Image (cartoon, rainbow, N blue to C red; front, side, top):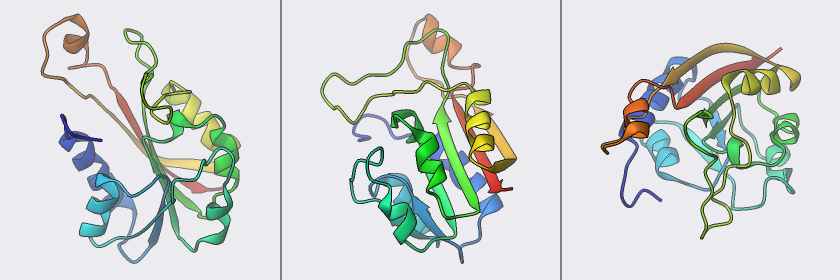
Length: 173
């Protein structure tokens, strides 16, 4: 997944945000298969449960059967066809979600070789806020940050100061 680039900045900001709001004594249900960031959470003392690779758009049973205190979805919601249904099935009262923001100078991401690696939603911050509110959550904290790339060009220059990621902590109302 990160053969060529490792998102250290994103992972560090996400970990600091997680530590700010979630105790290591709380069990996390992390949407998605085990990945480099779920390993970082475990290495930092968190107990993490991941999904097993099931199609979450069609099968949300794990959200109902697992025991967890916190739900996380880092860079996953943009891939789902119906993230509202997923949020309706979350048992936890605390959630942390991060998404890549829709950029006016870049089209939606679509891998030509991996059907799972496509963005169905390119969110703006207000859209995620509305989705969470409609699902019964109140946003407690949020942060936006950039993701500069080490390339030359107009779009790489814009990435130095245009926020690319949006990270939210919310609690059930």
